[in-house]
Amino acid sequence: APAESSGPSMAPSETFLRLHELSRKSRGAEYMDAAALPSASHLEREFGLFNPEGSGCCPTVDATGAVTCTCSGCERWSKYVAGTLGERWPTYKQYEVLTTEYVAQLARYLRSRRSEIIGDDVVGEPLRSLRVLELGAGDGRLTRHLREELNGHSVEVYATDDHSLGLARGSAHGVVAADALDAIALAGGAARSPIDGSFNLPAACDVALVCWQPMGVDWTAAIRASASFQEYLLIGEADGGICGHRRLTWGLEDDDVDAGDSEDDGNGEGAGRARAMPSYVTDGWTRVDVTDELGGRQICRTDERWLSGRRSRSISFRRGAACVESSGVF
Image (cartoon, rainbow, N blue to C red; front, side, top):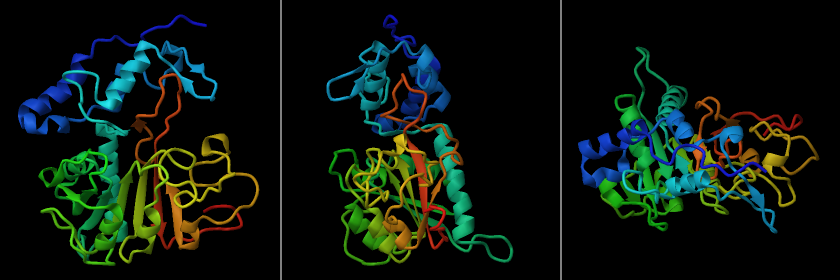
């Protein structure tokens, strides 16, 4: 086996850290955790990501089949996503590691979906703004960065979180304190129940945005059942991963192989035996993998330095689009 190596230098690059320092100085201590986003390239170089030949990792398999690596480079990456790497580094937990490229591509995507879902008037002006509801938004970091990118582009983004994981900072950071199902009912046109918080939600949102839906939990059935939502976008591990519910969210049965072990192109087009249609299909929705459309360079906390593949994806589900049962396209 190759000798253990620390991979990239243990000292953080000045270029990388300057992004966080500039934000801290310009916004003050209150906004320390809302540091300027790094680029994907900086992260990949800084932590030796997606480069198994040069990572210096020595992964081992334990009795349960779990694969781990305890080299200094992997320990450093784990501390980075946990928010414990040290002073001058982000101090918050990261599930989806937001980058300048991904946020910019996601903002472009939402602008294009505004045109397709809402449309324009005869002179090319938006008929109204596209309304986007982020569920489980944590401290609202994704929504805040999207608002900056989308300013003046007729897309409104609202953030909600129930505070259960201690990630949200409340209305001071634009996050409405609300359980996901309550927020869907309110913003999906099904109810007008009171929700705590000084930020109001619109009665009819068009797109739901879910970044790292909790494992074993499904909010998508409620989204599909609401009157106003035309799309929901799931960001994080898909299918057999750790986001959402295998059957209710992804349409997988308990005996289905994980997506990573099947011949699947990201749109649910797997080869093999016939199976029951996913609930999103019977509800009249279709699945579109937009990972590549959003740049194909997502980074997340479960990415391993000794692997070249990326684990996080962006999957869109859209109301009313046709599906072809005979071909297995869901």
